[in-house]
Amino acid sequence: MRIFVVAGETSGDTHAAALLEELKSVRPDLQISGLGGPKLHAMSTDVEDWTHDAAVVGLWDVLRRYGYFRQKFRETLDRIAREKPDAVLFVDYPGFNLRLAKALQSHRPNTRLLYYISPQVWAWNRARIPRMARWLDRMFCIFPFEKDLYEKSGLHTDFVGHPMATKLEILGDEARKPNLFALLPGSREREVRKIFPAMLTAAKIVLARRPQTVFAGAASSEKLQALMREMAAQAGVGCDIGLRNARDLMQTAAAGLVASGTATLEATLCGLPYALVYKVSPLTYLAGRAVIKVPHLGMANLLAGKEIVKEFIQQDATPTALASESMLLLDDAAHRAAMRANFGKVREKLIAPGAISSAQAVLGVLR
View 1 (cartoon, helix red, strand yellow):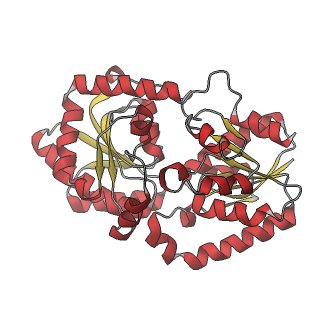
View 2 (spheres, one colour):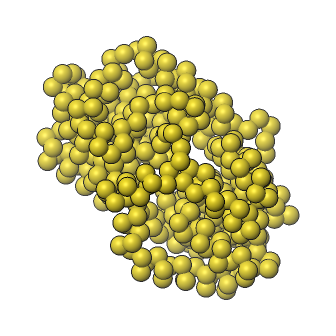
């Protein structure tokens, strides 16, 4: 059995690696190739680690690197044609993956096209769903409301539950360091450059009012660690920037500021009281605002049907506002308890009772 996987971001690399590890335990003959990150590359040297180049944020980044993505797209089509895998497994990353699925749809008579972790087209372009039904053989979604949306279009869809929901525990104050505050501006350099300055200035304000506070951050690479340390030094803020998994901080910090994205749901499932922060280029923000059709940016808020986590978006993400919310998160135990109660309800929605695992679902299709 041979699977060609395409994951373009850190979170996709992590989730795809976990799925394929489980699949490999059932099918030791599984051969893996494709595009991914360090975890998939560690599983198979036939997976190119391209996430440093592929993980772009916003319209401007994509336009600026259009030539690179065009070349990579053609190379990937050629590789799939040569290797003739049993399945292509697309993992999130819709800008690249949906175009690839469309291109492959009429040229892969014996290759199944599977999508794991649905792109959030329901938030910005629902018109794509019927087209995806024509391009794909199966969707494996991790949010419960997605199944009906896709199946109405004729795309066979399995809700396999969120991969983190059963693995993470919502930890309370007793398991945390009361003065440790997490600053998590994201895993991409452009995110860090946009978001971290406001976080650091907010940290200075908090320190002036609450000098016992200790700040820490997580870097996904040595390059990012060096950049974050330099930015913290220039801002005059003592911040322990470790080359660590952000989850380690989410499970020990008293509270935090977290960049919008997969990390916010991970923070929710770890029970970290936090505020969501989102800042991008003006062009990207205006383009996104024109098409986004959901009331909240954070998945925890969408699943809860209300704002259980404060969202600071673009011009609202000021250091003063972030500092004020940070103080509330650090010093108001009742506020933290209420957040965690809501987090527990979100977690329940992400668990598929009695459902088969994503790896078993993939294997069932290929059989």
